[in-house]
Image: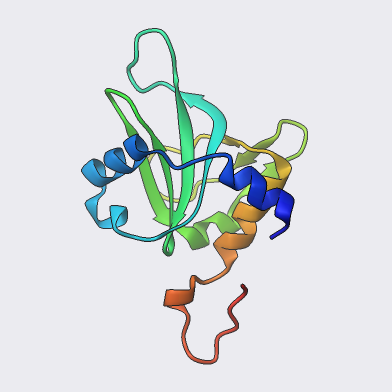
Length: 139
């Protein structure tokens, strides 16, 4: 990952209220290590009166999660391998997800091209603690 990508990722935190929402609605995923996290430019309705909540995306161990905090929080978790079908649209700046699982579709994530590329790259790599002997692990 380039230094510019690291700088962009470090400037977009994974706040405590997002972690608390994840812990409340998906306790098994809350204990997984956060390998990548970013705040997207996508805003979703979570039941607030006058504004929408930002959508956060993360790779947690071998899972991909999107979380939005609010009175009606949005928490969706799928295997990170499902991101292999995601497509980045350079015109709109959105990472679109074709039907990754059954249920409601994932909303498209508004991400900078560099951040979207790092997400797609990391989704294809196995985390270090999941690697088996003989696997190639990228640093």
